[in-house]
Length: 258
Image (cartoon, rainbow, N blue to C red; front, top):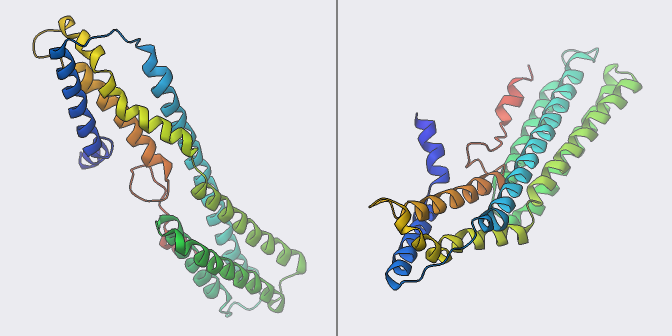
């Protein structure tokens, strides 16, 4: 039940209340001034609902792709650890432990990059990540001195390469989101639509029973702003704010390396 309430208040927030109040005020003023008009209902779907639903679908697909790339990163990291643990002739080597530490450092730094809003730190953190990838690549070459054949070392090197590709895909998903112009268009219409539709809502007053005149402006405001809030939470899948966000858990990965 607590989770349900948390999810509810993520989509119903102060913006919903502000737009609802403005919509009701606009409808009240229009009714008492005699400003009524029969605007077409289809305008809502064409101008607002369709672009917002498209944005939500696009953000959801981007999140699903990010989950796949995170799985690639995690799977290849664990495969490298297993190689350093199981393929060597010297089982007393510290190579597996060093691999665990490198993967942990990589995951922590990657999590910090994707959850931080400090864009000026991005370049420095990216340089650090590639430095850690370089250390991981150099570490795999030590397998040669521990009895691992060249073909198997080549395979481990490919695992490192696939981790780098997975990280770069995650970075692109983080940086490039729904087109800014489409988001700006949707937000403008979502926030002004319930207000400028005041004459339309006022024209429907006689269609409802007493005390139900303001149901339509309230419903329109709640629905449209809630859709926008859903899209906002899906837009940034790594910020760990929404219920559907991706949570990068470095401890989970390291705990599997035993």
